[in-house]
Amino acid sequence: MSASASASASASANSLYFGENLEILRNEIKTESVDLVYLDPPFNSKANYNRLFRTPKGHESHAQITAFKDTWHWGEQAEREFDELVQQPNIDVSEMMQALRRFLGENDLMAYLTMMTNRFLELQRVLKSTGSIYLHCDPTASHYLKIVLDGVFGKEHFKNEIIWKRANAHNDPKQFGRISDTILYYVKNNGATWNTQHTPYREGYYESHFKRDEQGRYFRTVPLDAPRHGAGSPGLLYEWKGKMPASTRTWAIKREKMEELEEQGLLRYTRTGTPTLLQYADEMPGVPLQNIWTDIPPVNPQAQERLGYPTQKPLTLLERILRASSNEGDVVLDPFCGCGTAIHAAQKLKRQWIGIDITHIAIRLVEDRLRAAFPGIAFEVHGTPKDFDSARDLAQRDKYQFQWWACSLVKAEPYQGKKRGADSGIDGVIYFKDDKTPKKIVVSVKAGENVSVPMIRDLGHVVNREKASIGLFVTLTKPTAPMRVEAVKAGYYQSPVGPKPKIQILTIEGLLAGTEKPDYFDLMQGGLMSRKPEREVTAIQLGFPESAAYLSEVPITEETPRKPARVARAAKQRKASRKTA
Image (cartoon, rainbow, N blue to C red; front, side, top):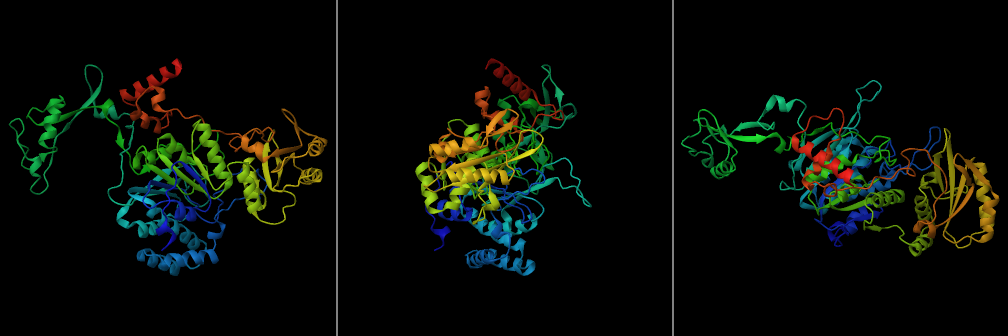
């Protein structure tokens, strides 16, 4: 029996997992336990999609954090995963992947598709029968990924190719500007959860399609007869107020509904006695959402939402997806959670969530993001040290994993791309700007019990050799008094806001407790050190119904169409609530 088939433990709701998502899916996530999957995986091997750092121009980043490097190139791991695919029970997928391999050969793209297919199979397993999956990708491999998804989920369960306009213009040489991403939407079965979403009517729509009543409300009447197909439906052929529909038509609704509308006073009659439905614009939700999304801009570099993650998606984009295919209390899974936008959206919309990422710093970033946006939030983090004892245990088991985790505590990029071996006295690097010139901080992590003055002296030499501004000495063991004296002897870095210690000693215990942190001034807008999301405020806290929450989905700009009176009243009420607060 495979690991996926025997998985029995159900992942705790509201949990972050550090580790390889395939293993976590197989070992931690129970079959048919997830309502919605959103994933924004790496698109191809020519970009470092899990990179969380802003390296200044002219500085080559040592840590691209190519977490999927092994699966981007055909080799032993790709061959092993392909062999698993060929032997797994889904024969359609097995034959499809063999055909793709014959067509593509053993190259980076085939390795990537192999990696993704294994994960799609697990995601299909963990989805409930009413579940949906949204795959965010770009044209690099979207056509191949759709073939794979057709094989895993069945082509009859493909619902939409959503085109999201992520930029206004690109000057791409010798080709049309590439300004869109693709989101492939599949369901596990045809009875999947679905909540129709709406967008505001276009400008001028009310004047062209509605009239005004005595109170100034926009209204219109809609015919309640419809073309007859074949013999027509017996339930739609009946006499109403002494009138039958024309010979080629039926009523659009059954008698019970017609009677209900009559009681509500919503029927109006033409001169020939044909019933019509009275509709008020301020009671209509808007236009049903289509598959081309141009109304959600990308995350602006100056936006409060921006966290410094290069492929960060806007929160409104994920909120739209979650509202469409899940309900409050449902479980949302993001197996490549990155900076945690899907997790943030799930928490905001009262869904449960599970996030997985293979980098310590991504998990740390999501932790910080959630705690800033939702003060007092409770969630679990698996696979990373939670306290001093678990940190010491990690250091004893794997000093390299400990070093990379410790770097995440100070938001440093692991040096040399997480390569094991000689590090020239550097375990991590931080780039910052306190004027027009980029500056560098080097980080030295010590996991052993014996720390000494020579180590501080050595870090000072590394700072000078690397022409760094500051050196951080991160230690599991408490430093001695002579070590602190030696750090002071190194002098100070003169920043625009005053002198900063050139050598700073930080303990794991202090970093975990929040009593210690690196001391430097950073002007790099959008960097991990300088951005925190705003605290989330719910619709109920603002004083209007939760049902009106969808209105915040559309950004307010100069081009925003006129909205019906209901929206205007909600905006007025929100403004008044803020003044009162």
